[in-house]
Image 1: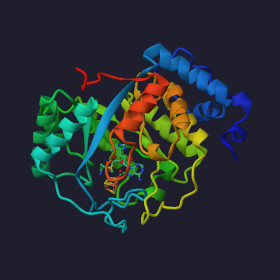
Image 2: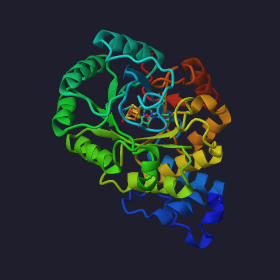
Image 3: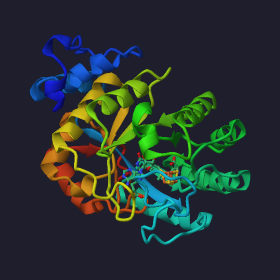
Image 4: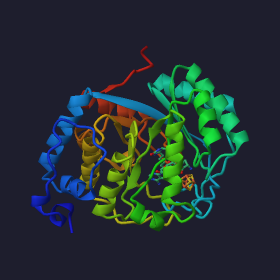
Length: 337
Ligand code: SAM
Ligand code: DTB
Ligand code: SF4
């Protein structure tokens, strides 16, 4: 059954045309937003977007995998899980100098934020010290910093904050109801606990999810409700389209209707009016026209540079051409500064 058929028109949510910041969304209200005629949904999302943002400016972050593969978690989408054979080479924590060289290159291409990802369930304190050296080095280049390292203790969140970390990425990935279909080695509550610690330490939160994992309309709605009803909205909300990797349990999953992906972006924009909504993984399989619809739906951030963590992303030159075609600007373009 499509999103449009599943919710009666009479259940339509009140139109949030002004982009009011709310933390009391119900799943029914959000399903009604998903079920709006496409043009109405896009109009509302654009309206909210233009109330709070320059609609032609996009924040760009570059990613680097600073520790790759052999992860003890069993996330069904992830090429880095030790539970699956994806043929991925494993690498220990990178030397700080190599990370800083990659950050310099990302800055020269125009990235404003450098995001470092590690395939850990949770880091140990020695790892955190090395990551803090990386954060300090990247900050010294004049870039914003983000890391994603798995579950953290209180002491670790404060140590990262003291090193100058700007954002911590920790995704909820899907609804609480669907979570156990995707990951069995940790709970939804584990994720929420780390998010709370990250907030308490005064860090900006980057938290979103993945669609196209076989979840239903209700799961996409429930994920966005969970994010929007957090005590404070995440400053950054990555919406990933599943990148199907051979060897993972989700390779071969039914592909999501691309317009449902656009709707997910639009609803995220309406629910979290002040957040950067990031058009994240999956762009190599998207046409320029589909990406243009995502920007129209209110996405105003991307991952930029030829690699995500282990999989491909569009090369910088093709994104520069896309931005030119659409009249978009990169926020704080560093290369020309
Ligand atoms: N291990 C840490 C964790 O899980 O939080 C940090 C790294 S993990 C690779 C970061 C995020 O990448 C995951 O939460 C997931 O949302 C995203 N991700 C991983 N594999 C993906 C895939 N195949 N397609 C889309 N997103 C993916
Ligand atoms: C996020 O939401 N997506 C990024 C980043 N945060 C860490 C990761 C996408 C990973 C895609 C699969 C890979 O390249 O390994
Ligand atoms: Fe490990 Fe993170 Fe991949 Fe899960 S998503 S297997 S925790 S690297």
